[in-house]
Image (cartoon, rainbow over all chains, first blue to last red; front, side):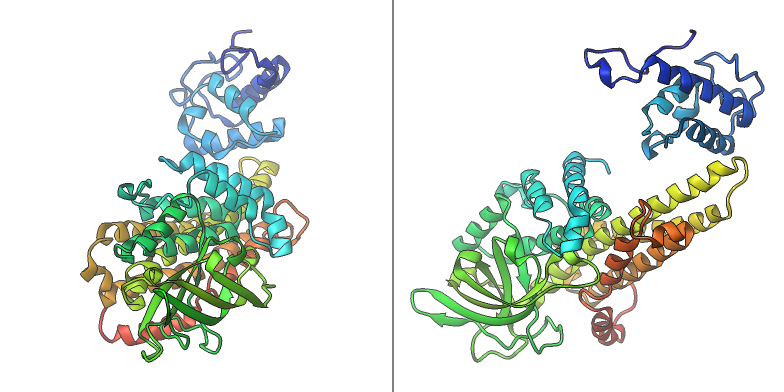
Length: 103
Length: 382
């Protein structure tokens, strides 16, 4: 896989870290949401995990729909503190946010 | 919230939230939250640095009150009322050793309650029937039939207004610090209300004999205008801001749920939510501005004593007490039936009941009657 399995380095209390399955599911959901609602100039399924999505045409209006789509697919809610511009900046950041969001 | 009190406010608010439903149901004081505030040093936060405290500004206390209000409005109200009374001790207490002892009690986490109205007085705080009566041994006796004393069972002391002396006129009042050890409290009424049920504001017959040094040296009219009214109005408003912000959060969750069912189209309720946020922001801005304004003039006796300042302090209380009802009502309409239900996680029942208490605890009508006289003398502060 071409993205990090964990938003933060694994530690001894790895139990609290999102499992690989959850991260893979989040990764799929993020790419699907971006391709449906992101309005990107590039193919969302192959965008590099650290590519700047705003540079690829993501607008702040589109981020709302991307967030809603991720929330719907994963049945999570993004907490307020994650609703910042940087959360939507890259695929990697979105995956980290989606796995950190409360189920 | 950010700043030096943020983590401690969040920890206390979490405890308050965990017990809020039960406190509301049983109309009992939020004892667990009060203990958390004490352990976190927040009941002592405003004690000046020179006296061993942290010297919290009113702006800082305002943010704490909002955090508490979001979690449990009754806890926010207790915190707010305590701060106004506690600040009177070092702002108006002079250099009496007995008052210094009372400040030490606050520093250790003691809760200060108050009795400022009297049975038959119609809620008036500016006059008393009861009086301070000198007795032997440098002590004074005081007996008062008090229709409302909030959280009396949790307090370390009750600050009681009374006429200065048996022959003093009704308006010549003093504030007496009465440690509960020197006080006999006989309950005269229960507290079974729509909202703010956890303030447990029962009526009591108070009978006390205390060290004469616990009669604060300044007249109560000054203490009230310079400290108790502005501080309590700002912190009440801050607590109500928390109620309103919590209702807005619930409304946002509901609208987001709707938006997920048809991604790409903005649900009609989102416009109502945007409107609600305009009202909430206005409420927040006026509350925080009033807190910062007090901090600016906290030691300026002329500014604090000005008629125009009383008008701004009363204006904030009246405006925010109406705003909180408006905002919670808007949230109720946005969410719909799930907010109206009591058994839903989007219920706004407690928010709505608490919101209506804001215009009752010190009635807006009474404040407007005070303002009516002042309005002939002064305009708004621009």
